[in-house]
Image (cartoon, rainbow over all chains, first blue to last red; front, side, top):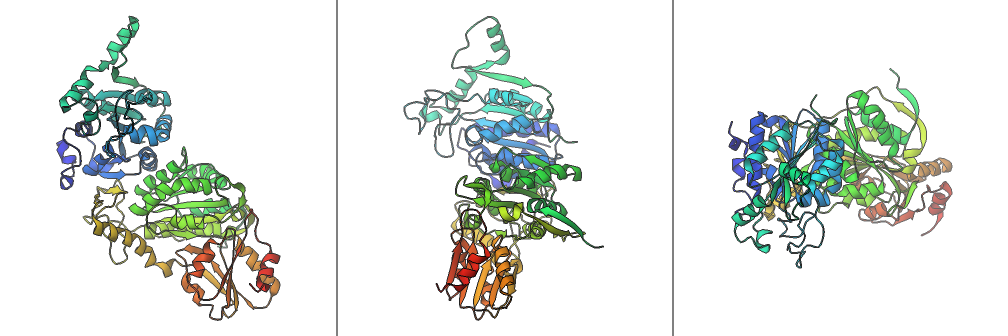
Length: 262
Length: 367
């Protein structure tokens, strides 16, 4: 089956802006699911509110588009009530880390058998570009007009510290790596968290000197620091540049999980 | 077989009523004075193959039971005022997505943290209108330990039949008191109407209730809190579609108002009539018992929402309705909307039931 068969053709066109990175992440996710050989009737997508959370509405399975920040709590109910279902959560940085932060750490702590794909565009896209908990210091948004003064969350460190079994970060540039990471996440029992940094030309890029979509993707590419390289730099006692972020598989372990298919 | 007799606390009876009704998912968060419901479910559900999960807060508790319900579970949570406030967000989601679920609120004194260990009925209007937007729900009010069992079981049937959140609006008095209870061999179970193969998941027939497309059964249902069309697809800027959807959500309960109504009428010829629900029912019963004669009427309501206004009309000689409530007259105002004679609210705050003397005095008072 082609991963295109997973789309609800009667929902097109979608709402995403030209140049949005979310489509890349959705395609990677569906390609990974397709490789798993999962059937539609045993797969459920859950999401909260925001651009990323609209994704389940375009996918031809049972899907639950819920309230802002609460996707993981709904998904916990679905998965605990019927562990036979494969449950995938689409979320964004505002949905997951701001209003849903408490649900995020507790879902990690329970190590519940969900795969969570976070499209991190570092801004509130749907409401028009307000600062989020992952907006980098100094970046402009409609609510940080003088530059964001707060320190952003590292979502992957948060997930690891809270107990997730699998944690990985890539960007919309790293299509093959992202697809593979999601695939590993789907295979891993327990809580799997895959963060995908994505460009948002409409709300983030135009305020932050990315005149072209490709400029932002290029930025994500050149500021990505492979985990192995980061580890080598630490070994050598080298300073890791402030504007770089680590990509790759960050956590993989086999702690006891809940809600796993018997 | 004769029914089993037990001497139970109201909250235990509530949990047992849920189990008898086939509740197989409980998501909750500890809060006085409802915690015994969660504790009882935590002990019993795993042994029956069900799921108990203690969530991180009441927002998540409500979310978890909605998620569980879409997999076909009979799902419940229990809380009190502060938790009920947190649940309002997802109660609206349940109403909008027509998700069957049962929410127990063992009411305590509010606002805010208020009186955690004392009794109140201050959440009656919140139960009806607490989430944003227009919608309709069903709310039941038990007055005895027996009714804690029976009405909890009934709540699941109403939730499944009408695809709506159903509230058991108990109070600390009924939740924590212990009295004799008869346990029936089995309780009636009404199943959800399933979605027919190929049917649209949010298209309703004459009863205004669509078939339920359970997750994992191949219906590929999209469930969203956004205004949606009959396919379940978001259509949030279509004025006619939004109006029709919200109207149907309200009308499906309105249409069934008489079916849902549950009340007792005592002394319908009386000129002075008490109307009560929950804890105050017990004081009214004492007053009627003490007076012996049939000169005082009593409308005992078990379903508060939708309000059984037709029951009021059965007191044809009524000169005055007296409404003792453990709040500042929330349902008294609802009664005023439906009758032409004076309605005397007898509010009581502080956490204690009205005394029989207080209600007897209200009967004698001119105003």
